[in-house]
Amino acid sequence: MSQSRRVFLATGVAAAALPNVLSASNDVISLNWSDLVPDTGGVDMDRFRMMGVVQHGEMTTPLDQELGGKVTDEFNDQTVRMPGYLLPLDFKGMAMTTGLLVPYVGACIHVPPPPPNQLVFLTTDTPYELQGLFEPVWVTGTFGIASTETQLAEVGYALSADNIEPYDF
Image (tube, rainbow, N blue to C red; front, side, top):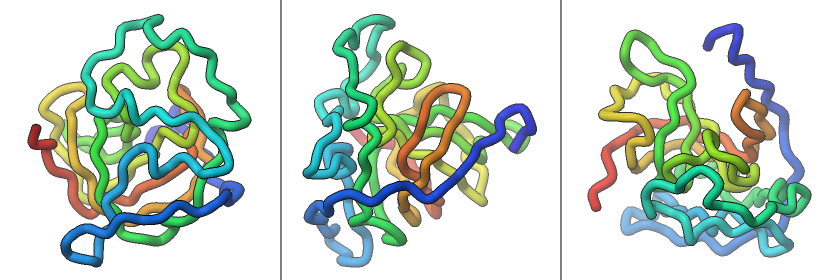
C-alpha cells in the first residue's frame, strides 16, 4: 500500500445482529448490501445495488452520518460472498491489491459517498486484474467490522478476499 494512501483500521462499535442467509454450501454466507445495515438504524442503500451508473449530484438526500456509521457484528470472522463494484486503491503491476467494494457505480467519487455501513475495504493476497473501473464482481472472503478512513470516504467493514470473480448478470 502506498504511503500516500494510509489507511487506519480500528475495531468498530458493534450493533444489533441481523439474520444471516446461508448459501447452498452452508459454509459461505451470501450477503446483500441491506444485510450490512443494523436493525437499530442506518441507511439502506440496497435500492442502488447493481443498478449501474449514478450521476454526480443524483443522490441529493443528505445521509445521517451517525446512523450511517452504525454497523452489525453478525458476520464478523465469517466467510461471506457478496456482490458489488470494485474501486481500486492500490496495485501490484496492473492488478488491484486493495480497493473498495461499493454498492453502485460512482460510489465514493460522487458527492455524497455512501455511509460507512455501505462500504467495504477490500484486500487480496492474489492481485485481481480489473476489466475496467467499477467492475461488477462477486467477492468471497473473511468479513469483519473495520473503521477505515480513505481519501474517498469512511468505511465500516473490511473483507479479505479469497476469490474475486466477475458478476454474471
